[in-house]
Amino acid sequence: MARPLASFHLVVAIAVLLTVLGLVMVLSASSVESYAGGGSAYSLFIQQAVMAAFGAVVFYIALRIPMRLMRQLSFPVFALSVVLLVLVLIPGVGTKVQGSQRWFDLGVVSVQPSEIAKVTLVVWGSHLLASRQSEKAGYKDILMPLVPAGLLVCLLVVLEPNLSTTIALGIVLTSLLWFGGLPLRMFVTIAVSGVVAATILALSAGYRSDRMRAFFNPGDDPQGIGYQARQAMYSLADGGIWGRGLGQSRAKWSYLPNAHNDFIFAIIGEELGFLGCALVLGLFALFVYAGLRIASRSVDPFIRLLTASATTWITCQALINIGYVVGLLPVTGLQLPLVSAGGSSLAITLLMFGIIANAARHEPEAVAALHSGQDGRFSRLLRLPKPEVYSPARAARARAKAKANGKPKPKPKPKANAKVKSAPQRRALPSGRSRGGSAETSSRRSVDSDSARRTSRSTESWRSTRAWEPNYPMKHARERGNSR
Image (cartoon, rainbow, N blue to C red):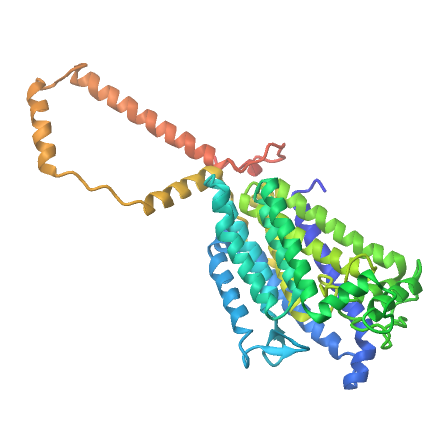
């Protein structure tokens, strides 16, 4: 863990392990349903594998995107995701499945714009709050651009309807406000308002109120609304400590609905036992450690907010899924990230993991190691570009320049007036003399002051270029950035 790229390798390893585990469990859990529906036991698995391959491509693209470009494109991409959320609600444009109109049917695959909105809200919100923090803006400036935009996205997703994704978007917005430095009093007020709104939404529709009733009274309708949660508990209990063995689940034989999707954790518990469930929980716990480690070690405020908020979103979604499978929470329909079947969710989550891995390469120690030639085999194999050096002084000058460009320029004074004012001064002074002494003394002072200003500017530039360097011992001179 003391190596400079340890966080990067952790994130990549966790993404690979969870994706491979998900593909194996989707194949096992969906084989019976796929064979009964279309004659092939591999149809759902092939779709999941194709989306995993596409997710690997977007993961690689996210690794190569510079953070500066990501911040520049954050708002246009977020605005595009909002437009897609509006378009999917138009009849004939969006596809309606099981009462919900939330997909774009592209023939080969279906795209869910609400999944895209999660990533765009995280990136744009982090960029916005990082800019406001550097400007030392008030709390009203922090709330006004972000909260209305987040509520608009949540409203559009509720209209689909899709309560589970609305909860995930609420988690994203809440984590952004928490890590953005919102006061505890205002944060508690917003959190309580969100819980009240979620409760009202949960009780407003018939199927959602049935889920809440089944959670509080699980024995009232064991063969109706409480059937799915009850069968998940039976499946977990049947697995025991060691499990029945990979592919030996009984619940997937049409006993547990959505065994390959929302309730895949129950199949993991049945086939791999308690040890398999502990493996999944351990991987997500390691992901929490890696994400918060990246956020705490980064010097860029944007990377801190982005990594912490994305880690909170993915982890909370996993805990909610596991919570309703084991009976601790009402059923919401949130998927287990990277494990449950679902093409859009898998690809978008891999994209987010790629962004987090890219952020891991911007840790100060990682930047120093990469710029000194310690790329490692994995980075050289992928031909990843070297991360940009973050300098607080350079960022401050860029913000000052942007402010100066936004202000109206002062009008220049007329040249004639300047000549009139300077003429008496020239006549008052004798030729070759100044008030402080001879012309030679005046020129020498001017030269000395110019050299002092040049020395000050060069010292400031030297400090700004090395502001990113961490305080830890280096092995080689090249690692310190010496170019002499």
